[in-house]
Length: 256
Image 1: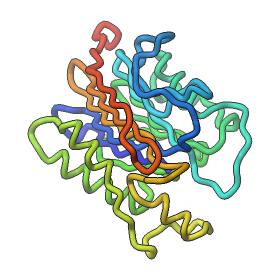
Image 2: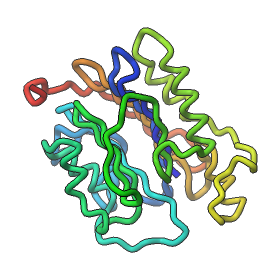
Image 3: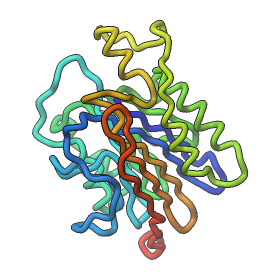
């Protein structure tokens, strides 16, 4: 049950600000954010089981993130959703063209965010097609964009507060708001026909579990000349793990 909070062209000095939690089984192998040896222009975490990423940026000023779509039954699919983000960070196609070329039938349910330095595009293979996003503050969990789940509402409010300054937000403050493990009231939980205890476990912004929980919290801040990325990894029950950070310089020649 991942969470991606983002402010697109809201802050005058930071055209894109992202605060995201990746929730996953702890047993699934993954590497924290780093420059990829086989694609050194990409800075992202990596799913070492399938080879893709849940969230990443590159030196050309591109950003991509994907969440799975919560569904009652598992859907078999031939392709990994993490390839959607990795492939976008490896191409020069516009976000709109890339999204339109995706064959959603090859993937289990997903929601995808793409920023090419100019436009932000949202696509889900559980919707009718891609859409350009207008400037604003958004929240994405494992369902449609801006659905009113408690973690989305609470997270957006926290992000709005973090942006209420003249200076770009402090990445540590973004990581702090992602650590919110407040349990919402039962009456506010999604009604998806699942067991109440399951809904309770995955309802907070930050999930502390024994086998499944928040694996990484990531702050991404786009500036004029660089992208600030700060990531904190976690183990079972929220145990603090590796920390990664980078100031990814933008290759302005690629943006001209």
